[in-house]
Image 1: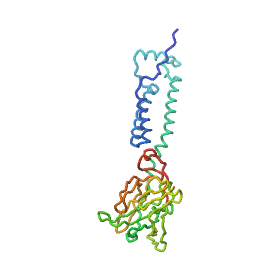
Image 2: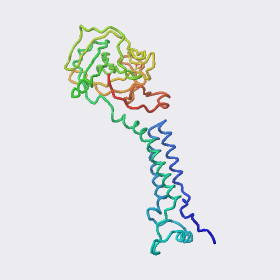
Image 3: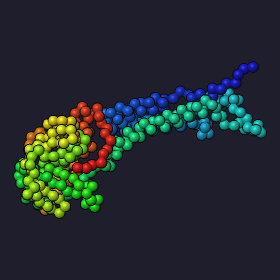
Image 4: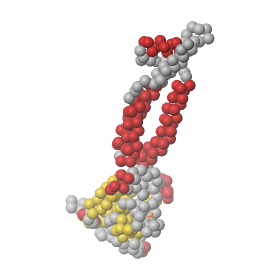
Length: 308
Ligand code: FES
């Protein structure tokens, strides 16, 4: 007596797993080199994964399998009859259960591994800071060629927690005869400690404009007390562990007042003052490389709360 054939549940040849594997590989490589490649990989993995899952679960979902007529006859023979012997019960063997369990576990593990990474990639886009323009007062508050320490509430409605410090220097007019400013954010780009000016602060010349405090300082460089990071007058790192130049604020002149805009990250600055050439990047957390090979090797840094 011959054994009944039990190969009707064996998966047929399919290209979807290959596409899924390519998508996952593309996603992992993209996480290292570029979010665009990662997004393409994720799209491929999702698309091929869904097609694969659809194919594997076709019989379970009751779709008519695309099999040859003679094979279908063997499958019908192998399917158990229902109690009254009228209609065959749906075939759900142990191997099919294991197959579905393996796919489900694989998907769950993939989600656990990739979702936090994707979160760290996407969240910083929603946590950018300096959403509120800050009026630092009349341009006369800023003597040419000297730094002024400006401390202000970035968002007065949430109080002291939004207090920030910037080092502001008026550079004189630029090549298009517009007032030029260098405005460095005091937060160290190593791990976020408050950077200090390397020079005496003229407390007697302190000024107040609304909730902004302005204190002139005689400094041509800045230092971080935490790990010895040092920056020059353009905010370029000169010593210590910081990974890029000091962040800067965008600015505008409105009704004769200096108004701070958004923060941005700086790879490097060449030249000085109004003639400086700044390699500008979207703002990133301290410790994040924004240029050079390190930006490729260490592309993902968890977002951090700002302070300073
Ligand atoms: S936090 Fe500034 S050097 Fe480390």
